[in-house]
Image 1 (tube, each protein chain N blue to C red):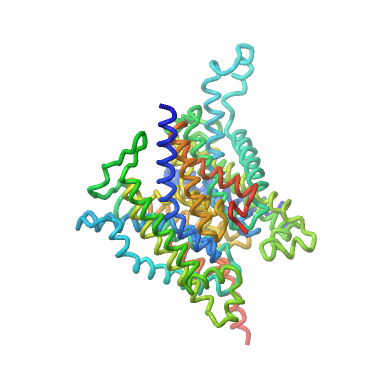
Image 2: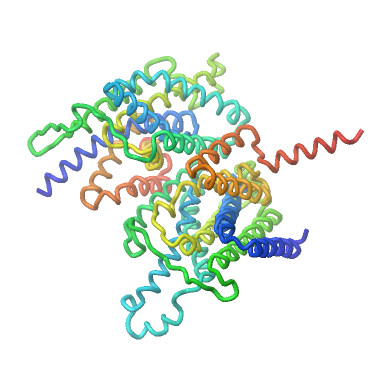
Amino acid sequence: MEFDLLINAIIAGLMLGGFYAAVTAGISISFGMLDIVNIAHPGFIILGSYIAYIVNVHFGVDPILIAIIALPAFYALGTVIYQIYYQSFEKHGQDSLRGLAFFFGLLFVTEVGLNLVFGVDYRSVDVPYIGGSLTLGPMEFPVRMLVPCLVSIAMFGGLILFMSRTFIGRAVMAVSQDPQALQLMAVDPIKIKRIAFSISIATASMAGAFLIIIQPVIPSAGREYIGRVFAICVLGGLGSLPGTLVAALLIGVIESITATFYGPSWAPAVSFGLLLLTLAVRPSGLFGR
Amino acid sequence: MRTPAFILVLTAVAAALYFTFNFVGNDYLFFAGYVVLQYIVLATAWNILGGYCGYVNFGSAGFFAIGVYTTIFFYTVGQKIDTLMPDWLIAPMKLIFPLPLPVLIVLAGLVAGIVGLGMGYLTLRLRGVFFAIATLALTVVMETFIVNWSFVGGSRGAYVIPPNEVPIFGNYIHFLFALMLLLVVIALTSARLIERSWLGVGFATIRDDELAAEASGVPTLRLKLVATVVSGALMGMAGAPFPYYIGYVEPASAFNLSYAVNSIAMPMIGGTTSWVGPLVGALLLGTLQQVATVTISSAVNLLIVGLLLIFFVIIAPRGIVGLYQDWFGKSRKGAKP
């Protein structure tokens, strides 16, 4: 019995971790590769959840499909934000303090804006597979978790391929290492950074849809993800997408086991505790250079 | 102005404010004024680390809550003295408890300062960004801890019943208001002292170029630790009277994100380079929020804070103080032929 519980906790954790990978993908690109501390990212994820929610309630479309349709809009949002960020902060050299405050303000405005429009009630979507679950011996896979996890891992795989195989992807990796050298190769680092940042915001659309499939959402839900995504990002090693995936699965499993055996109210402290520990002991993360 | 004179002037202004409010005789003024004063302390405290050293602390709410829960802890100990202590200790403990609020404020400052030291020691060696994220993480760890600690109320929250009357001040809110005024005087004086001493110069070198400072022999880690401890302790002290002000505290209200946002927004809007900035920002934004809460709604006033913060960091990076200096400097130059 105890063993079944552990097996199922690990499975639930792996599925949760798959979802965390999607949540962290954006931060891993913007913070890990571009050195832009976008703490507003969880706010955009919640925005994605609410877009999925409105369209789903009115037209009954599947949230993941909605997220894919909304990708260009999020990409455009990312472009606009990067333009503002670049013009006001990055161009003038290192002023990380103001940049941080800027993103903090964005996070807050997104949250309060959603609060004003939708109120503080929990919102959820209606899809046919939300209640079902697959059983395999003692193991149980709730479809509500399984679908976001699989799509998320597919998306993550796509990102890894994109970053390692395409010209733009490689240029993004290059810009994270040496923007000046990139300039010498006649590539505009600003353009590359803009594209990369826009992609990072676009992932928020997908992550938002996953989130609202997994659980009901309130405007302030983004906050508890801030520490978690940075924990995963730092634990995985900055700028390493495969590292991020491994760290996401790891934190998912640890959280799930904690929640199963010690109660869910302790779960949030796990990832944050791990973050503090990582920062104190090995700031370069598991897969860091 | 020399420091003693500065303290004297500040105290005189504080006393004048108190007596004006007393003269008007509307208790609402005291309730609203208390919140604004609390923000002055928080903003000034944040600015010691954030503005002078350039290390962003997103955990103001955490330090504030440390103060809040220190009070609740000792209050609860005072309530349950008969069950908690061995028999021979009950009588002497009854003499000490309940601890008077000024003592609680000092204790809260100590606890918050120690937490600040610990956190700083763990994270200040890293780049500023990691410190900022770590402060966020620390807040959530502390909130989880408090939610699971039933002695101080857990997620249900805790009630604190303030005495109705206090000697000298009469009404309890008058007493709280006066205490907060005193904290404001302490916070502003320490900020100004730091700014003008070798500490302030050291902080400025860290803000401008930490590597260069380190290379020229500035003990950066030690300076940053000093800033974190002072800043954290002041925030904790600002939180200590809060349970007596509000009467009922739950983790969500003590760890409210609006404390973190406000204590960043106020110095940013006022100007981060001197003690005047947070004061101006907190007075302006705090008053604006009090008015907006009454006339519009509390959600809208938070939206205003967020938008103002974004607006100011983009358009006027040096805040109102900077704008004033630019404008004043220019007009003076223009006046000369």
